[in-house]
Length: 264
Image 1 (spheres, one colour):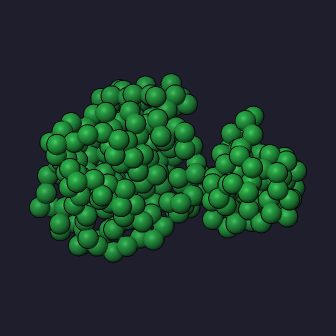
Image 2 (cartoon, rainbow, N blue to C red; image 1 turned 135 degrees about the horizontal axis):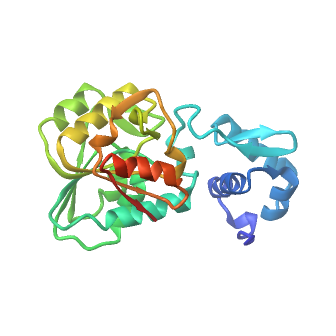
Image 3 (spheres, one colour; image 1 turned 30 degrees about the horizontal axis):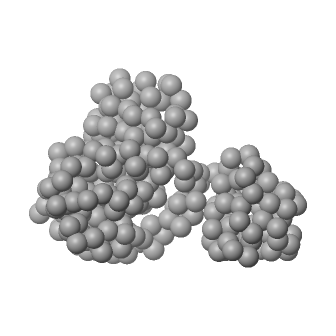
């Protein structure tokens, strides 16, 4: 394992992100292992683990931590971003290559779509229009002169840093887009793509209706999972970008439904 920079040079949030990554990668981690890795006291590590457990990023166990169930609750965006970050970055970079100059795209709020936004920042644009309900995405792209950001108004969901509700729906209904990049919390062959919040699901469904092409972007942990609210059946998607951890049976079910699957 590569040793991280000295703890004095690591921000608390960065250290906690690395802790979550280690726990998920190895299936567990002890206080002693983490203290040695980050060269800090067990007391500080225990405080980190307690904070992560309160936010459902890990499950506290005797002497250490275990991975949290990925879909047990509507997890805050700040925690979602720590999970499978490397996979999400690869997915975001690959999906962003579809975007062409002059297009209008929709970026749903999420921890994978923000990686698309970060990839778009690195390219030169003559003109690009991005419609989003994600505050974090608007902030990521708002300072780029050639990118016009259209922020959907509505009720703020603090956990996802997204805007939902009738205001967002009324504005979106007057627009159209070339592509939608949709992040979801679950995808199941029987019910389709799902998310925990009913208002988010309603807005996502409208995003699908106003877009010429719909691209799902999510890591392989979302396959076979179901959340409370159904966004659309599998037939509502044209393509999916995920990571190579996806099981063959899940990929086969998508391809049989007519969805193109790209694993990166």
